[in-house]
Length: 201
Image 1 (cartoon, rainbow, N blue to C red):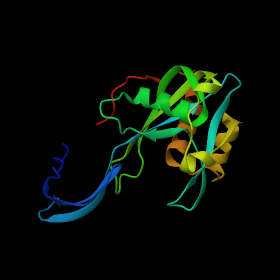
Image 2 (image 1 turned 90 degrees about the vertical axis):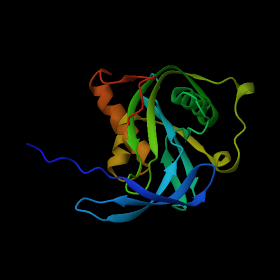
Image 3 (image 1 turned 135 degrees about the vertical axis):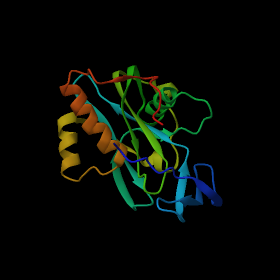
């Protein structure tokens, strides 16, 4: 017989900062055994990322500067789910076109992840894009700010997994997406979910 799980209830909530992408809040939460504790957390709009895999078994990676870590990171094409009511697959297709000038004939769900649940509710859905084609030159997105400095490369999927294991790729959604893609490939793609699969939670 298992013990009844404690129900964590929010007794009070104070918004410390509110912006376009996230808000910082302090919540007073009931704890097991009585009493409460204050938890500071970041409520985030969420994001998508895309493992774009070509017919040669190469993945498309970008190298982008990230101010919080003050260096360039290897990442997947990715973006925020900040358009109300937009299907995450539509967001993913748009980011693929805007960041690496590609379209995908097939899109499947690889993995969902909470990027850092100790302090944020950010949920990232990582898609697998296949049947890739180039966006016509005249229709390509004009990239600005950090995106104007993007490096775009294609790397064999197994080599990219090696970069993860060597600590050369540390972006959470990139790590998860590459490992999931390699595992899904080795399983004959049988574990993939449809692009419209419900989000967890």
